Image (cartoon, rainbow, N blue to C red):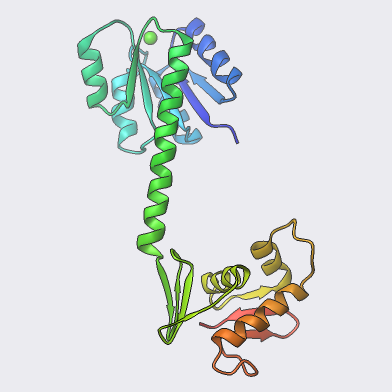
Length: 235
Ligand code: CA
């Protein structure tokens, strides 16, 4: 999916030039010509980046940035009309991430846009990683512990040797504790659409898993069979 950019600029010629060049570079673009429309579009569209002129009808760019900053972390690239130190300082104070002084080249604008998007992407990846390691590092089911970060499983404190697909299947079960999961659903989610095989693959792996994590594999209490349906992980 292309990244979306909201262009806020009241000069039609510049607005069109910006839109044209951004679209040519593969971005989805929406453009508006005043501050109120900017707020509306930003809330509705949730763009990946906002290019925001300062001198605008209705609300000026500073005001728009100030309001949006309370609602979103979307990067804002401000366009200042002249090489005005005060505009830049105020722009950064109200929460703009970068600014460009008119006139600017499209090449420079593109470089700034891409730098901001890259920064946001890295930040989001970092946050996702942190979230995963701090919030969901381990899943504990009595004596069975699944370490999601290290992809390791212990039973009564002793490591359980699992093949990669056995581990993925166990993790999938653990993330859906108490839910009835059909063989087809498991196959699709653990093996993927392009897997050439059938639902017996799931049965075979469940059997292997049971031998490794059940107290009595012949009478499983962790991964139970749901008649006519599939499996349910009880914990
Ligand atoms: Ca303007």
